[in-house]
Length: 590
Image (cartoon, rainbow, N blue to C red; front, side):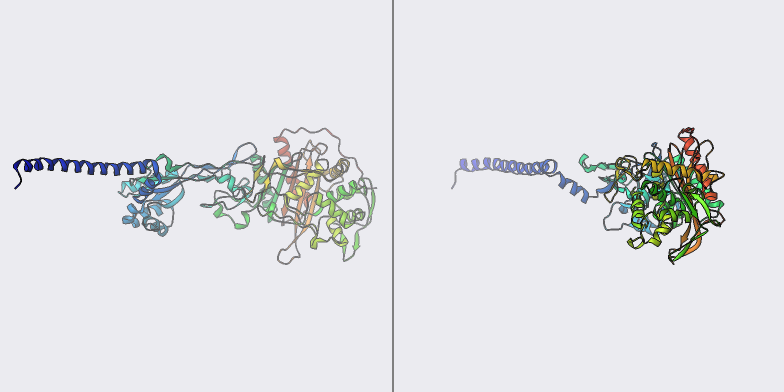
C-alpha cells in the first residue's frame, strides 16, 4: 500500500502538468494565428483581397477621360464634360427592383425592362451592375437623392465623362461622334487608341450608399490614364464660315449637296473641309445616315473643266504648249466614238491657249492635248495626286479613278483632258490645284497638326507631309496667269469669283453626273470652282463643289461667288494684304 507521502506528491504534480499542457496549447494557437497574420499581410496579400471579394468586395472600372480633339489654335472641337454612371448593387436593389426601375426609367429616359434586369443582377452574386452611362451630373445626383428620400438603397454614382462637341455641327463630318461605349465615326474612330486612354480599376466594399466605400488596400486601385489630345489643322471659325456660306448656296440653288476645301498653299494644311448637309455631333441619332460621313472624302465625281489647268500645266512643263499658242477651234470635233462639243455654241473661233482656259473650251483643250500620248497624260496626273488617296486620316476615303480598266485609250484621254471619264474626291482635287498655286510643287495635304498614328498603324500629319515637284515653276506661273483670265469680266466666264482688291486665279468646272446604279449620266451636273489668291503670290487655295443644282448655271455663276466669299474671308482673317501685282494681259483670241 502506497505511503501517504507518495500520494501527496502526485496530487501536487497534477496541477503543474495541466498548466504546462495549457501553456503549450496556447503557444500553438498563438503561433498559428501569427503565421496566418504574416501570410495575410506579408506573404500573400492577394489572398486577403480574394477573400474580401468573396465577402462582397466589388471591382469597378475607373473611366479614363477621353482626349480632346482641337482645332489648330487649341480650341476644342470635341471634349469631355462631367457626367456620371449610375450603378446598382443588386443585393440591395433586387427586393424593390420594379419600383426603383420605374423611377430610373422615368427620370433618365432609359429602358424599364433593361433597368429591371440590372437591378435584379445580370448574374448570380453580382454586386455591381451598370444602369445608365454618361448621365449629366445634376440629373444623376437629383435622381439618386430622390431614391434615397423614398427609402430605396443600393443605387450609386461614379464619374463617367460625357463626350461633348461644343461647336455642334462644325467639322462634324471629320470629327465624328461617339456611341455609348465606342466611337462610331470620323477622327473619334480613326484615332481611338490615342484618344481613349486606358481605364483603371478599383476594388472596394459598398456600405449600401452611393459612393461610400471602404478601400481594401492602396494596391487595389489602378489609376486610369487619360487619353491624349489630337490637334487638327482646322480653323474652327473659318470652318464655321465655310459651312455657312456653302449651306446657303446649296439651299439657294436647291442642290443635292456641296463640299468645300480651304488649304494653306505653302504648307498643304487643310484649314477647312466642309460638307453640306451635315449633322450635329451631339445628336447623331437625329441625322440622316448619309450625312454622317464626309462626302468630300468618301464620294467621287467627275471634276469637269477644273481639271483643264492640270492638263495645260503638264503640256507647258513638257514643252508642248505655251500661253500664246494659237488654235483654230471648230464648233464641234468628231473623235473616234463620239463628237466633242463645247458648253457654248460657236463656229470656227481663234483662241490662244490662254483663251481656251478663259473660255473653258473642251474642243480647244483636246486639240492642245493631242501633243500628249495617253501614257504621258496619265503620268502627269498621277504626279498631281489623282487616282490615289490623300491619306490624311479619314476612314473610307476613295482614291478616285484615273484610268478605267487600268488602261487609258486615246478616246478616254480626250475626255480626261477636259475633266470627264475620271473621278476624284474634293480634297484630292483641291491639292492638285494647290500644286499650281505653290509654284508646281505638290505638298501632300494634312488634317492633323504634328503627327498621329491611326488605329490601322499609319502615321499622318504635317510632320510627315511630302513635297514633290510636279511641273516647273515657269509652267505653274504661266498656268496661273492664264487662270487669271477666267475671272476677267471681259474675257472670262467667272467674273463673280473675283475678290475685291486681290488678283485671283481660278478655273470653273461643270460636269455631268453619273448615276451609280446605272453607270450612265443622269442629266444632272456637278459644278465647281477652284482657285487661289493672291494669284502672283498665293497664300490660300479654295475649292468649291456643288452637286445637282436645280437651276441653270455652271461653275462660274453658281460656285464662283461662293469661292469669292470664302476666299475674301480667309484673306482678311489671316491679314493677307493685296500683292499689288498687275492683272494678266495674255491675249485670249488672235
